[in-house]
Amino acid sequence: MNARQPLAEIRDLNVFFPSATGFTHAVRGVSMTVGREKFGIVGESGSGKSVTGRALMRLLPRSARVTADALRFDGTDVLAASEGIMRDLRGKRIGLILQDPKYSLNPVMRAGDQIAEAWRAHRRAGWKEAREAAASLLEQVRIRDPGRVARAYPHELSGGMGQRVMIAMMLAPDPDLLIADEPTSALDASVQAEILRLIEELVSARGMGLMLISHDLPLVSRFCDRVAVMYAGRVMETLAAKDLAHATHPYTRGLLDCLPRLDAPRLRLPVLARDPAWVA
Amino acid sequence: MITAQDLHVRFGDVHAVRGVSFAVAPGETYGLVGESGSGKSTVLRALSGLNPDWTGEVVIDGVAMEPRRGRDFFRRVQMVFQDPYGSLHPRQTVDRILSEPLLVHGIGDAETRIARALAEVALPSAVRFRYPHQLSGGQRQRVAIARALMSEPSILLLDEPTSALDVSVQAEVLNLLADLRAARSLTCILVSHNLAVVAHLCGRLAVMQGGQIVEELTAETLREGRAEHPHTQELVELSRDM
Image (cartoon, rainbow over all chains, first blue to last red; front, side):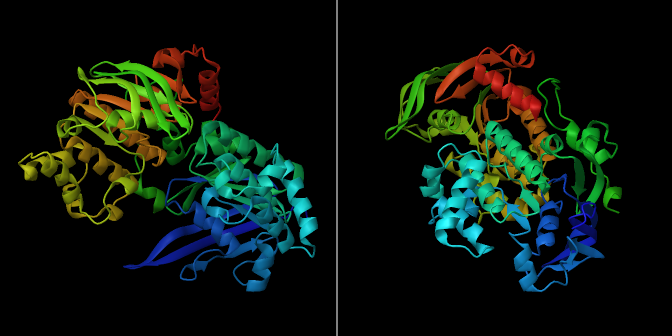
């Protein structure tokens, strides 16, 4: 493929969900392109950040209405593609890591078997080979005792370990783009940093693209090259992560200001004033 | 106001809290920080009477506590939990949720007390006849705080009160807690994994690891980077880094 061609291209994406009073307009005209880079989407709950990621994998419920001028992954039109083509895309080309490994891992299957299954799903290979691949993947996500973890059930693993298993599973088919939707929100700060560094390193080493979706603006800017800030279904601004301190949009500024800071104590925290003009 | 001396909590073979001691003065807000599994919430649950299985000495307002508490204790000591969705009855209206503490403690004048409580936590009066699922996360946490204040407690125990909220809503709830604390001269214990949140609201805090307090320090010492224990320094560094 062309190295300069973006992996994901989203132009004027709109998503509607049926509600009691008609339709809820969850994503309103979102445009972004993601290449082989680390791209962050930040927003509060209900801003449409996760829905945007799901729309790219066509993982939204059937009742959702999706329209876009362009919704393409590596040249494939996601809106028009057949279910068969989408099945090839999901997992194999686009990996998805979710927030809580407790809910996204199969509770009655050993961790190693789940990784092996993911590896086999997109290859013609036997279980023995798949198990060996799983052990090597567990090593790559820096698990010290891959044998023990491979034999463990998800409830026997800590949150950080579970998320490593999840990452190993997603890397198994060797995807081009990794969508990580709040991958560390359920984890402690120290584990959070480890997991994000791990994702960052693996993504860079494999030359993949990363779409990191999170509510945590400082965290995303720390690990991404570019950041899109979303509010009420719209992209407020897209900026280079290193320029975040000089963000000009009042919403981005407000999000940064309302965080309590260790180094700058304040009696009251500034409260975000939401301007209706942002969504007009 | 609150003293814990050599507090131990065991769950079967797991020794979750190993000899924790601290003292909180009247009107003070004391912080407990630590990662998950450090025992911070377990300390709070032992103080609050939710877990009667502890040993050691707990003195609240000059009275040594038994593992099981009387009704008067629960009027004076109230708790706010992390997830307002999980701690509010899904099939009760806000009105019903707020009248429960009044019924339990035989406090009359429900009508004006509920209206006043809603105003105090800055919720519109229309919220009164809604159900929890009809409210936003921040509104739900305000209802949980209002419920905790219904019995006019002198002590408020806060277990990660803003961890489930968006940062903009977190700022509003932290401001609200600061206002209420001043207006009602509440003594508070705040448990959180977020060092910046604890330092914002608390004058003094204890850092927990493996069921023990590894360091007790003032928020000022913490800000100036004069924490001594390596675990505290690690937490400070992470908080600065992110």
